Image (cartoon, rainbow, N blue to C red):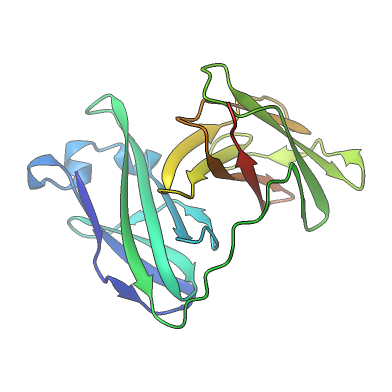
Length: 220
């Protein structure tokens, strides 16, 4: 499999179309190899300083073309295309880079914190992410101290999480195994090594998307 941005330099702005060329083995078009691939495709984009995180479902164009609408700020960007191939019986993650023109001012990684405020909601992380197979973390959502029990799914799951390792942009896709509508979402999954990670958790409430970012230090 291979992926690259059709235009290696993009213009900054909101709702910018970014086209990717995705080629399957033997030069085949991805949908010819696995007709269901598009139904399970995730496009994750962020600047290399881990700002501007976006997670969308890309659309298929002609031939090898896939595209997404992104909000772009100046600087180097990293794109991950993740899909489950029924043809191969496994998940595949491809990555590529492009640059958005303009002056780039990288932002420092926020310090580790287990609680963030996202508009009117307080999102709290508990549990330890570790390198052990039974590692897990929980996300709890409250509104002015009251448990939120009307959460809505994001990307087919009650909660959706992505871990990025800043050192090399290593990637782990996490789904919540929780049922119901909150206030707690549980995620299972071990990380590969002791390091600093950026965790992005997505959920909906009132048909509005909430994105809760955490900086997590894995020490064991």
